[in-house]
Image (cartoon, rainbow, N blue to C red; front, side, top):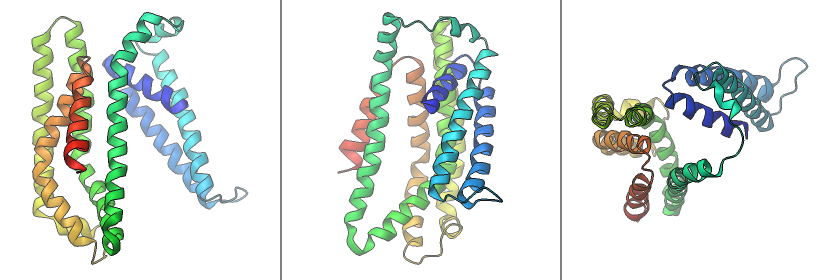
Length: 262
C-alpha cells in the first residue's frame, strides 16, 4: 500500500511538471534501502543478520519512508490543495478507471509474457540454465539502452497531457516527436556499442563459457532494434498522456503474445 500511494503521487507530481521531487524521493529511498539491506542482511553489533528476511524488512521500511517523503513533497507542491479533495467522487472514479484499466492490463500482459518466455527457455533441457542466465545478464546490460527510453516516455506523458489541456494539440504533437527523436539518438548510440563491443560487455558480468556466446548474440540482435524500441516506448507514453491507453495495450498484446512468444 505505501508503494502504491508513492507511485500515484509521483505520477501526479510529474503531470504537474515537477520531475525533481520524485527523483529526490527515489534517491532517498535507495540510500535507506541499501543501508538497511547491509545492516539487516549481514547484521552489525547488536543487530542480528537476518538474511533474506532482512532484505524484505528493509524493502518494506524504505517503501513506507518513500510514501511519507512523497506526501511531504505533495504538500509543498501546487497540488497541496488535493488533500481537501479526498472525498470519493463516482464520476472521477469512472474516468480514472476508464483510463487506468487498459494500462493495468498492458503491464499485466508484459509481466506474464516475461514469465512465459522464461518458462519456454526452461524447456531447453541441458541448455536451459545457460539460456536463463544469459537472458538475465543481457537484460541488465540492455537496461543501459532502454532506461533512457523509459525516461523519455515518462517525460512525454505530462508534456502531451499539459499541452492538450492548454488547448495546444500542435505543441503536444511536437513535444511527443521531440522526445522520440532524442530517445532514438541516445538509444541508437548505446545500441551501436552493443553491436561493436558485445563480448567485453558480457565479460563484465560472467566468465561462464556457455553463457557468454548467448549474451553476445542477444546484444548484437537487440542492439540493432534499439531505435525501434525507443520509438515504441516514447510514443506509448505520449499516447497515455493523451488519455489513450487502449491502443498501447493492443500493441503490447500483439507484439508480445501474438508475435514474440510463439
